[in-house]
Amino acid sequence: MDTSVESVINDVIPILRKFTKPDTVITEDSYLMRDLELDSVKVMELMMEIEDHFDISIPLNALPDVNSVAELAAEIAKLKTP
Figure 1 (tube, rainbow, N blue to C red):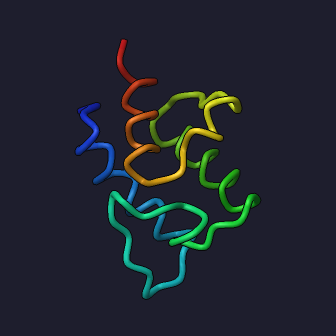
Figure 2 (figure 1 turned 180 degrees about the vertical axis):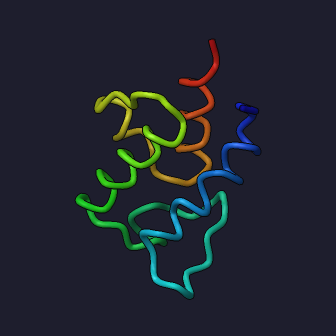
């Protein structure tokens, strides 16, 4: 699996669509809570789905630093890199 941030963004956006309203525009600059209107429960569900999809474990202490789609993708790419 390609772990470049751009590739991860392309994989993450379809996952995010499961948690947003159908007409929501999602870009790499979208903020998870502000722009995509994800509450804390949805964010935790999203993290579980991402962990399953990418076969990673996202440390809870990393979550406060993840605000945007790009930041989420960068964290995933970092965790996937051996």
